[in-house]
Length: 135
Image (cartoon, rainbow, N blue to C red):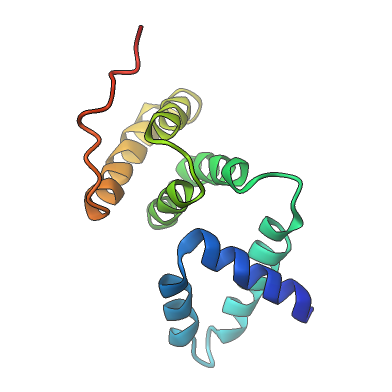
């Protein structure tokens, strides 16, 4: 395993998901899943997020669309929070979720908005005062 790619991945993973979350994931690793945690860090984070070219915001947008399409709720919530960490505004996130609903189907959009609300509530973010988004 490339130590540099792992270190790059670890930094990216902590930047997006938060040091507390990543440290807990790695600390919970045991003989059964430790290699998997290393693979996730090295390849998913170091081998993709760590490549540059696309911004963290662009990668967040891609992940939200793919995770919604795949119906991966836990990961969607994790990456929704990461998208906020990466600087996406609530207005941008709303538009992403609307696009998800159109291209992945209304049920996927309903679920994406429901999961997003869970994240916003957990983070203490009141989105009820946002502008309605229409002209």
